[in-house]
Image 1 (cartoon, rainbow, N blue to C red):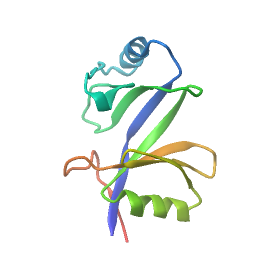
Image 2: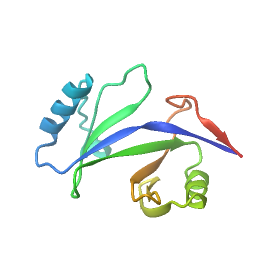
Image 3: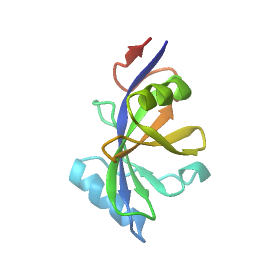
Length: 126
């Protein structure tokens, strides 16, 4: 048995100046950018959290700009296998999560739960 839930959205931006992209999306969504100098955050600018529990980040990418979602889980391998059984495929592993592709061609990530609380009520999978 494992649990998973929508964690939030990542705004993939093919840009040279990530802070400007984060400023735009922060203003558009009413969430101030929260830049980080931590090495693991290089290439990302999180936007401030709200009561909705969604994690929204602006990310610099080498591919076309697009939006992707993250699914958070307490068992990355079990969730990736569950999604493969539904028709998704693994594209590549990044650190401790998987970039996956839905049968529709949409990319998304399966990421590990950080801490002990889900951002919103999770689904419990057998």
